[in-house]
Amino acid sequence: MPLSLWMSLVAICALGAMSPGPSLALVLRHTLGGGRAPGITAALSHALGVGFYALLTVWGLGALIVRLPGLFQAITWLGAAYLAWLGIKALCAGRAGAFAAKALTTTRSQAAREGMLVALGNPKLILFFVALLSQFVTPDMRMADRAIIVLTAMIIDGGWYVLVALSLSHSRVLPWLQARAHWINRITGVLLLALALRVMVGPLTG
View 1: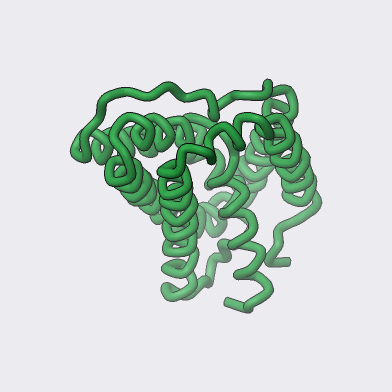
View 2: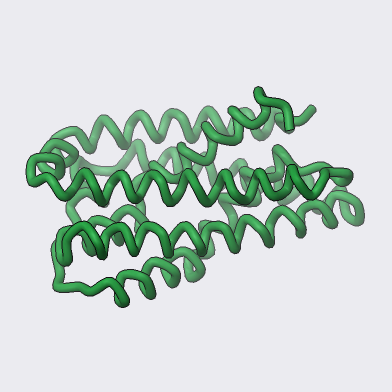
């Protein structure tokens, strides 16, 4: 995979991971309720769920491109519409959003279980991957390139949420995030809308 293409993948995966939503709220809750270890556990188990979806999507999209190119194009456009909806939702979000998560008493085993369930039980996540990975998958893609896509998605997702858990171990970080949540939501919304437009223009591999 060319470095420029991989950097585009990194940027889009990072944008998806950093978008405020239920995954962020999950890590916040377990970090605030149990400390650093449950927060990191939730982050890593969520990344495993993301990797599972990424693996299914990479192989499924490769077969779909070959067999049903028209359906693949329709899914790509639906994915772009979903990204645009996420962007609009982020722009309309209030000051707190996911950053207002409340603490609860939690354990590492509970964090691991819920992290996986939030990833696998969220149908919006697979839609995001279809919109994302459709820009990088080709019918003749090598196995090594497929592995790079899956590992990149997993590492970035896990790395981001581990960073969130580590940062929240310091009591001053959450108030700082809450005070600037509206700007975070606005920036994320603009970037998601730009990504949706890029998907509609054409695949990044073209």
